Length: 418
Image (tube, rainbow, N blue to C red; front, side, top):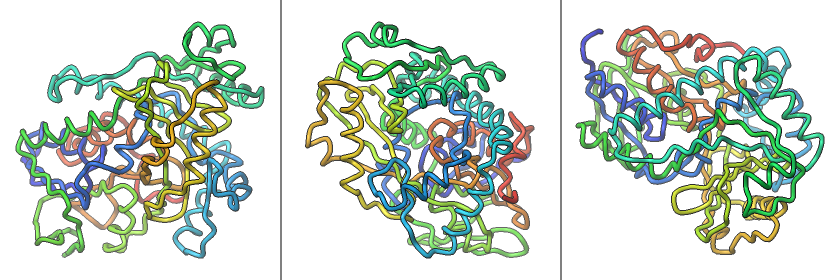
């Protein structure tokens, strides 16, 4: 291993904090900067899944056509707000180019591998006792369908996944009832992925911050990075609202904001913010199984103390505007699958959103951009940032320490062409 380095990590979401966790373990000195107080955002509002089964990237064939169809319906599950923004138009073009059968197939084993690595690392963090106790639910994940079309679509995924050692099991209506006896499903059946896990993100994030703090990682909350100085292909200073900081290495793990940071270095990173919403219901729902309601693209997770309903992908730029019609669409969607379940008004009023950084081909950016010796980029995980967070942190640490990476990172190259 090389010498211990001083590292600045920009971003305090699951990717940034996982990076800080593994860097600190390797003996590096770490400072984390985040523009928020690390109590909100995509790492707090996601469905909490660890999903090796999600091997089909977001950039799948037909997605853009669907997006165009949905473009003028702001309550649809996949919504692109029409706007003349050159970055968005370029990204949409790359997304379309990436949405081919061949490219999606090529990405499948890569998505599986990083998810399995990450699942193993979550379990390792849990058994290390570093964060105290937290739950990793191992009941699997059900893809619940109401139509044959959705069933057939998922069965195709089951076939592909089986070639890669991931097993999806079909559940009939009766078997669905057996597995979730206290819920009255309005559904025809489901596919159960036993390889998947579920967690409670706010609980893990809080414990991660406390652990890092205790281990001497300096976490600068409410301190945004405003500028970056470069000399001879190296970052020399990171300027924040409160002053200058120097370090041997810098990691950009700022989620959707990473594209703005990259622009300061003339790096063109194709990245768009995909907004997701969550509604938490604190009253008992009798739901014990994590489920994705296929036709509505809504995720359902029983968490510690509440049930979370999460969903939608909204491309409308960097903003935290809560569109009421989208929250309403989640509530109505859920009520259409669980008979007798009513989402309380209070839960809808307390809905939160988060911005997921989406690359055009659905694979994250993990690696060093060319012409910048001491920078590592770690973003672009789309809907799987939570699932891939620890693996990304581990891979970044291996890069910075000069160790052999746990998996081939060439598919994540930040300089890749679309």
